Structure formats: structure tokens, C-alpha cells
Length: 601
Picture 1: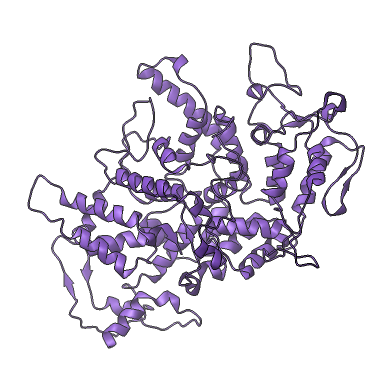
Picture 2 (picture 1 turned 30 degrees about the vertical axis):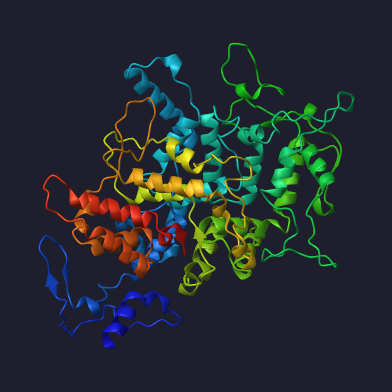
């Protein structure tokens, strides 16, 4: 009985923190205590030794390490074990604050630089300059991966991706050929990730890539004689998808009801028409070098517009007169077109729906699919007012990641808590948390096979509605439990099997590359198993190591036993076969395809 009780406390100490104690088993206060144990041993070919004293001095406890692994799974694209150990030494708030102080290199500039570098490589390998296009979405993908392997700005990059799935543009569209513009739009998300949401919303509105995607670039004022009316696309989506949603919300994200108990629309078609008037008159501020002597003006074709400089207002093409916005606000006649836009952005930014709307979507991206109303309300309150400031993204992000619903053990054990990790985050995890055999020194990646298999890569959604809807309900079981499962919308029979095939390829390092480039002749970059092969001497030791990295210490006994039982029969005997390699491959494949990994709790 004593043995089992001791095991329980050693494995799950992080679940007991309702009261803080300075002295407890494992606190490290073991002076004067001697321990005798049948487990005291060292083993041939192992650096570690099992010491009975570790049962009381704290070195045998992994609770803080596993808690940190889970925290970093929410806040980053994945980290190795040494990084997890370093973050575990300090409060999580300290790590967040240090991340706030980190800047990031420009993705737009990197996209352009990589195009030029890739062109040199292509020509050096016998290619013809005329056969190499760009900079396009391929070079943006190269830049994205180059920026996200071996970098330190982990939180900023994670939030930028989350924002890219809310304020959506996509290279899987008419934007495909404009790599620098894609990179520059990502810079807007990244550079405003720790700023103010109002500034972010305004910069997104004025970005030419958003203008080209949602058609308010060269959006003209009304001309009834020619049956021309302002395009309503961006006006609709900035309300429905970027700020307030379709129905009036309470601070906790629940629907506000009228006296008849019905949900209340936030806007109607007339509101869309009024906002469409606002977003007229925007055109390019500069043009690309061209042989046609085209100069900046309203009406210049999108292909000639500079995609990394904000659009400007051409007053002669802006809809004159007053515009009626939401909640009785009126934009007066006679002011400038840019002031009209700022007033419209302020109208949406200050709408009561925007705090819970954005709070829910960021929580779903980072922590869980079904936050409690209280969690949403707490984050909504921070968005609404943090030390007198509305829309403070630093405060919102910190509140989301440090909230008790994100950190508490009781929520980890709640069966309705957690989220399905999207396929591309799993891809990033494997690439960042495992060693790469990278001979070229370049972390460029197209991800073509992965995109075909799963339909996901950064800025690659099929529509402005993202890869999946925040409100998606996968099945009747979810519906009966009043639960949503956004990522399950792309978890189909085809994509789930395709993901298994992707993991099989990743772990077959002798035949498949983790990072893929096309036409450039660069050497493949497969995973490197050398460090993990050391732990593969014992199947259980290997699985415990992978548990710390990928399943945050939450690997179930049943899953662990299945994986260990699959690894152990892979024994030596044939000197021509690398059995440690086969063991690592088996362990990685099974843990990366396990429900314990793909569901983040």
C-alpha cells in the first residue's frame, strides 16, 4: 500500500496545489535523510543511474517539466527538451514577458531575399532565369519555415498564425503570385500581435493584399447611371468574421436574447451597404516597375500595385455623404475618406461584441475548443479594459495563457476540455521538437505533399472562413453535449489517413525529407534520430522521453503499454540492421498518431 501511495504522489504532484507548502516530499529539503531502495542501480551503456535518494530530493519528479511542456504546447509551435527545462525554472509569466520584448525579422523582406537566393541556386544548377517565377507563395513558404525553425520569437509567431486564421487572406487564391505581399501581410499580424487590436484592424483594412482578396482595392463610389455600386465583400467580412459576428453577444460569449427569447442579429443588409460606402476610394500608393509607364492612380490593375505598402485614399472615388453605422453612430458628410474608414474601424472596435468575439477565437486557437463562459468573460473583460486601455493584445494573450482554465489540473482532467491539434501544428511540432539532419543549413520548405494531404499550410486556407469554422459541431454526440470541435471539420476519413501516411514518411528518414524544396537541387532534410537512439535501448525509457516532448506527460497507461509492446520485440541479432533506428521510428509513429498526442488537454 505504501509503495502505491508513494507512486501516486510522485507521478501527479502538480494536481495538488490548492494550498502552497514549502516542505513536502520532493521539495528538495532532504538534508540528513538517507534512503535505501531496491531500485538503486546503474546499467551498462547508460549515463543515468537510478538512485533511491531521488524519491525525496525532488530530482525524481517531472511534474513541473510536464506542466511546462503543456504550457509551451499552447504558446509555441513546439520546443525541444532543453528549452522546456529552461522555461520550467521560472514563472510562466516571466517567459511571456521576455517573449513580449523579442522582435522578429520582416517576413516580407525575407521572402524577397530568399527568392533572390533561390534564383541564384536555380541558375547555378543549370536552370534558366526565365523558367523561375517569383517571388510567389512558394518563397513565402520558404520564408515562413526559415523564420520558424531555430528562432527565439516563439510566442509572437504563434499569435501571428492564430491571427492569420481570424483575419484571413490566402495564397490559395488570386494572391498566389505575390510572395512579398503575403510576407508583408504576415508582418502586419506578427508586428501587431503584441500591440493594440484597433491598430491591427486598421492596418489589415488598408493592406493591399486584403484589398485584393476581399475586393475593396479599387472599390469605386456609386454611379447609378452605370449601375455601379460599392463592393460589399469586405464590409460584410470585417463585421461577420473579423470583429462582431452575426449575433449580439453577452460578455461571456453567449447570445443576447430579445424579449421573445430570440437571438438578435448584429447587422442587416442595409448596414452592409452603409459600411461598403466607407470602403471606397482605396487604391495603390506605389506601382511596380513596368514598361508601360503606369503611375500610381485609382484603377491601376492589382498586378502592378505594390503589395507591401498600405493603400491610400483617392477622394474623387470615395462615396460622399453621411454613412450610418452600428448602434446609431453616423459618419458625417464632408470629412475625408480616410477619416470615414477610421470612424468605421472605431465603430467595430468599440462594439460590445468585439471583446467576447475575439476572446473566444484566440482561446480556441491556443488552449481549448470549448472554454467556459467564465473563461470567455474574464478574457473579454481584459480586452475591454486593461488599465484603462481597450484592445491591449499583450494583456489579452497573457490572460489567456495564465488563466486557471488553461493551467489548472482540474481542467486537464475534464473530459469536455481540450482541443484537436490541427494537422499543420502537428507538422510544426515534429519539425521543431526533433533534430533535423540539415546539410544545406537552409530551413526552406514548400510542404506540397503535406498541403495535398491535409489542406493546411500558413496563409493557405480555402476561403475567408479559414480552414474550419469556430462553431463547427462534428457529430450528434458533440451536439448533445453542447460542444464544438472546430478542427474536426478537416479531420475526415481521407485527411486522417493522409496524416498517418505523412507521419510514416517523416519517420522513414532514409527515404523521405521533412523539409522539401522544388527544382533547387538542395539536399534533403530528414529527421535525425541519433539522440533518440540512445533512449531506444529501453522501450519504456524511449516512450517516457517522447511523452515529455509530445504528450505533455499525459500518455495513458494503455497507450504507453501498446507502444512499448510494439518497440520491445525489435531486438538485435543482425549486425546489418540498425534496431535502435527501427525502435525510434516505431515509437515516434505510434505516439504522433495517438489520441493522447493529437488532443491537447
